[in-house]
Length: 110
Image (cartoon, rainbow, N blue to C red; front, side, top):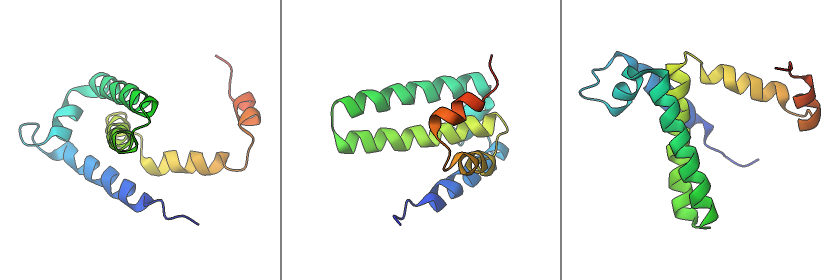
């Protein structure tokens, strides 16, 4: 099995959670979190677009950097939303081995 370094992601999530207690004057993460879910969601969306555009350029280094930015901003958004990475990973595990079509069909309709 490939080492995906998910321990790094978990450590980053813990660090972001700790930054909730730090002054926004000294931490970019704390500054983002202090601006609320709306700002964190906007930054996440911007990073998602940047990743999509980088992938279209077929530039691996740029795509890798943008993917790292996206993961960081996803974790910040989760922290701003009081959602724990462990809960997201539990949901991913729950869906593992289930057809994407079947999983989508099981979701409540809006």
